[in-house]
Length: 464
Image (cartoon, rainbow, N blue to C red; front, side):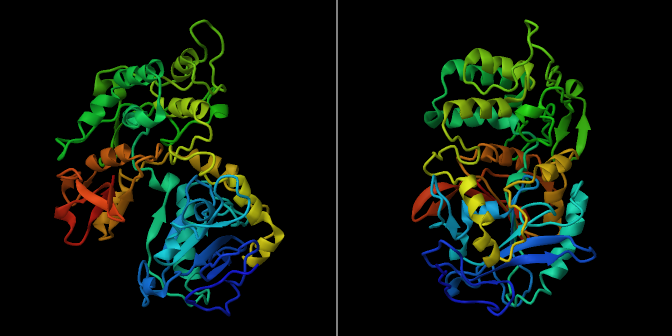
């Protein structure tokens, strides 16, 4: 079946034009897809998929007709395909629950403008070449010329404004997910229904590690830089992989977001925090690192003898995975019927007819490239709130931070903490707590706010 383009924009004679997609029996906006070589390389290419707006009245939303620089959606991982976001979140088609065929997405961003998805770095999704990135600087060095030169010279003839949007590792603002894990569990326990004997384990760890004291310092305005004890997870502030945790090392340090400085945890907090995974439990048996359980004894052994006494985030994910079928760290309300199935969309993108339609290479498509992920996570990277976001604001670029109420991993508590510990234009954090109602169809679904002092040329917006 062919797609049904609406309000065509751009060059339909382009070699990148996607004329039809198999299995689609509903209207789709025009789209262009394919690989474009990275300038200065022999055979390194990044794959893109550009969708036009479904309705011409929204051509100027996210779009400037006098600019040739596209808005981009970037998935994180690192090393995960941006088509993951397309097929599971905000593209014009999705694969909900057990549906193996694409279905229309009522919440597609193409309803409000053009969207460009790029698989990056080399090795992610349908992007490929001879050199896979080992460092984040290599990722940037490849992407910038691709974005500024290759896309503009591709004869797509579609003019859109530069708005960079990302999730996953691109949306990780907080210095440590562990700091806010217990507060998040308590905030949503009406839904999660965590028994007292399990919740008490996280509450005790929170007190031992000083996390509740950290959150108490995130006032409006803050009284000074907030010292965050330790680096409990020890892996770029991400969740530990159970199969990798035994024998792993931890970099215990205090961090002050906005200052970029590190201090010894004991000297700064006055509390000795042993975030190191021990090699054995108290009875001498091996630590329980591979068992996902919600049994209190096993959970307690996991948090203290496997991941380390302050690694509450990883322990919470293991517990919730054991208690809730199809648990989704990005939306705790998702069920097996509502969550998108990665296997189904991956199988669809690997179909020969689909590859031909989107001008994809013959390589096997995979959601995430484990090799790229492992290589890039070996490099310690400071969260964006240390230096990157203040620098972006300093260049006159507006920044919007969105945190879903039911997002466990990238939750609003972590974003608020990061913002209150960040300095830009001479002020630290928001001076007043975001309290404006965020309305959808006339209903209040959240709060938003911005820092007035920076709004002469910059606004920093947070959706809570």
